[in-house]
Length: 150
Length: 150
DNA sequence: TCCTAATTGAAAAAGATTATCAATAAGGAG
DNA sequence: CTCCTTATTGATAATCTTTTTCAATTAGGA
Image (cartoon, rainbow over all chains, first blue to last red; front, side, top):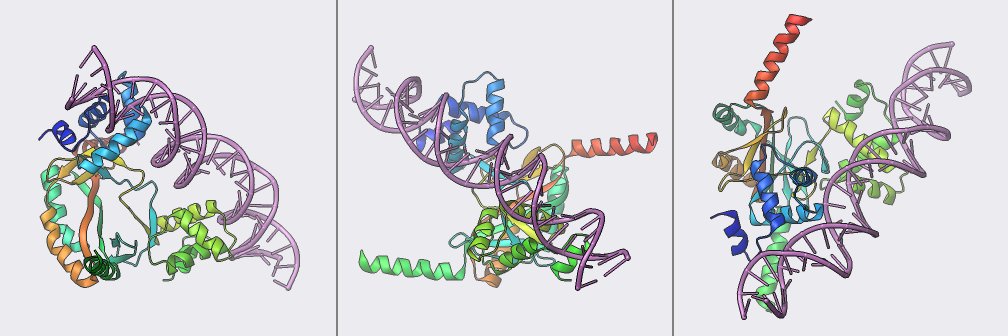
């Protein structure tokens, strides 16, 4: 299914700005930040507002047509690390983050990806997202309450 | 080695603002953004400039005492995804990103972390960073040139 | 071709981050 | 313990990113 079909299928209109953004992303060899997409569009002679770039990206993200790439700089949250532990699992309910060990588990994957892609890997970013035990309990209680009162 | 020793050992001074930031991070149950650290300090009656929070975090990051946590929102770069492929390896030389498959390799780790932490995992973020083949070549040429001309 | 509602763009607001520079304070020397 | 030097701080301002607002535009069905 083409992205146009996905877009229309989800009830959105196929518009000029959306086509421009998709075309630019399609021709890009590296991830682009919104302002870069905006500038590229201008250089290509397209009329496109920066705000529309933001809105289009948010939509494409929702549709799963694009994904985010995290560089080391930017706006992030900070947590302390223990020696040797550099991976976190973050609760999407309350934000609580705890560390977990297991970088070794990535070794096999790292080696394989290096061979397949030809890239020389020297760092990685791995994070899990989920519900902490407390938020799981809260979610269960919520469901119980709903089933009893609705 | 305590963080104070690490700080001083690296040639930095042990100051009030740095202690406050470390204490707040130490007591935090979730990752904190700079402004949240700043507000917490104010609520605790500490005098601390927001700018110092930024500077302190940058320093702690350099020393490896804190790490970044990436939430799904925020300022990031965007790339297209292929169906089923949601992981990227990004060249730190030129920014070029390509996808790789292998989410299955995380299954065992996911299961183990779920058991160990009690979290219910429903998403993850995995990215590799390294040098693409072209940038590796460029790096090799650079070294050759240096060894010949210096 | 017309109509309606989704979408856009410009401007402004809100937030986040960085640069500047005089005032302050950490920590070694005496 | 006091003084001195210099790293560090905090206030202000500048810069940049992202979101909000709202009137004008336009996609796509009638």
